[in-house]
Length: 228
Image (cartoon, rainbow, N blue to C red; front, side, top):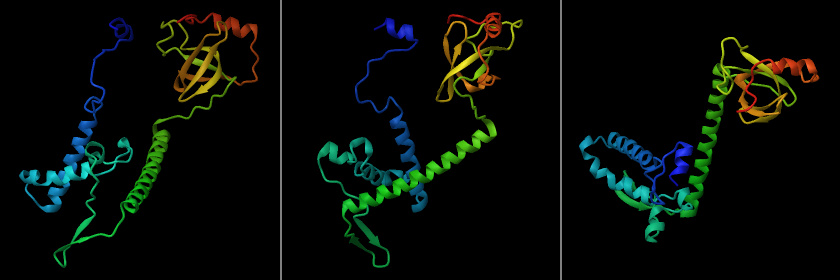
């Protein structure tokens, strides 16, 4: 066990099976609680020192809200077996200063919440896609290499031998597969394959170019690392 982390360059620790504080879940939840408390203090026009009086409301909502990680069940159902209570079960009527129970089934409420959640996710997806498209237009470049294309590989890549006397682009290599965000290229002499990002490649010739002895000789004179 000690040899494997050393070979992988990692550290091995024994931890309990359920540790939400390991992956940042608790930190994320704490930020959400702070955000909710700030909003509630502003809405209620309370002093920041009165946050203790609002904390039970936040805690009750967390314990009685169904979450996907618990199979769409609330924590109070999983840990105590008690039925959930919604904050919308009872509302105050400001005009009459009385409390009224809402005749709303929990199934209908959950369906309405799921619809609203899907609507918000769809809206966020549209915004995210627009942001990614804008980022691609401003900072990114679309690469249109296809299989059987001949490409040159930039020597900037750390897997290639570095020397000021060597040409900055080596090749040609043949594109054999398109993988997400990268391309798999094949060395014409050794047949070795590498996965390279599109920013490190550029076209050498069109796919109609036949592999000839002159091309193979040209490749063999570039000082390419034949084995990595």
